[in-house]
Length: 297
Image (tube, rainbow, N blue to C red):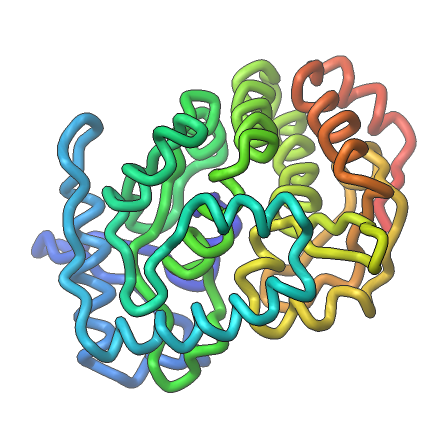
């Protein structure tokens, strides 16, 4: 989970050493003490983890597995119609369980032989340079908690559904994995915070919320769309603009609502060539040149 995705649920350590996930007043689980305790426990697992150690196992409840079963089934049906070919092929290679939440070490064991990627646990916020830097090493920071059972088809924040059904599905594709790794290398290459933010926004409007045109219409290729029960049906109603790195890197967005502006590539080859080419070559000078004239809408 990268930095913007944690605005609604910061993880804090109390004076007594307890880990607390602070849920917003309108979060579906804010008044459920059992759910809040589970969130705190799962966040604490990640905070106790050190690189190189085994990934901690989250002891999911039957209720939590049921949420996964419901969401997994619904998204699978939607992917048939609305996911791009590369994402569907990645999902077929990965063969995630549909009846239970997979542990992150299971996901890693599936991904490594396919693209070399592995998962590592995040309690919540991961600073941008750390999040993207891990991608350069083909490691993906992932939360382990799942959304509240009262609204299984909605979450106000990235959860394990987003991290695994959204991102792992795409990371199982060699083309996608190369884009992720290139984004990580780009984040390590640039030096200024402004350039890093620009790279992050291009990532957001591509690997999180990217659209690609296929012969039977626009399809979702970004993990944020692929993991959203609602937005994957609605993205075609957005203002679908042509791919423009300058605009993608400066376009504003609100993580709390469906995105009103998205960027649609003409083909998967254009995604790899234009977005991948940007990640492969971007420097601070590149960003300075692209932002010389404001283009955000």
